[in-house]
Image (spheres, rainbow, N blue to C red):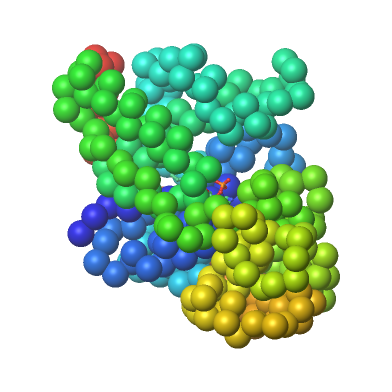
Length: 327
Ligand code: TYM
């Protein structure tokens, strides 16, 4: 029985990379582990948000978790903002985190590029809040896409530093990064990961895209030179499309390649679009059904927050004692 924790930012748009990188692994870990799946809404405000949208997106993320198969009876589902111990521990960890180590975070560098001084302190500091999210619950496993690996490593460094300075307090979390699916690339550019903040929606397949949109995006997907439906390191575009095909159907890449031997890219893309749509349809139906029941979603989040807060407070009592602010 391991403690497992993850969260996805409530941006209103969740794509298949988010799903396969973080949500599906959580669903699979639900049996035999103790799961915490939260909505990091305080992370979302590191960039400007419209308050009504942020609220709506928090409920949407919750609906997606449930639709994917997260069972609130077994998994503690909660919003970060209802468990104030996250921000409290975040502040304490801020005081042992170093400017230099945060400056090295590649995601910050990517997001801050070109914005000059006009970047929020929160965006810079965000990995420390993420470390607090993880360490509060003695999480041993953190299922994430590979872009978050560096942040989980920072959580390990901060845990180690705190433990050395104040005595054993936090356990060492491990990032859990699946072999295939932890880094789905943009369908418009196989050199860059699929991203919610991509400049064009052609980059990603949203969990809420309708069948015609999915078909259009896949038909416009970048391919490699040549005509063969074959992946491999030298063929990143096809490798990515084949990986998506494999993830939504459960077939191996070799099986999909064999089934398309001698076929054109056009025929392959049509089959891929059909496979993605067949996979999305039941998921979307569940997301929409859960989204309609706001009272149920709020109850799940409130009940989850109560359970999470009990756990978090046990840890914070120890932390406050150790650093000398308990009085
Ligand atoms: P976020 O919201 O950017 O992404 C949510 C999850 O989706 C994964 N992901 C991908 N996986 C595969 N292929 C992709 N193209 C792809 N793009 C994104 C991310 O790696 C992530 O697992 N900092 C986190 C949220 C967070 C968190 C935490 C996660 C806050 N506190 C504590 C774990 C534990 C984030 O911004 O993820």
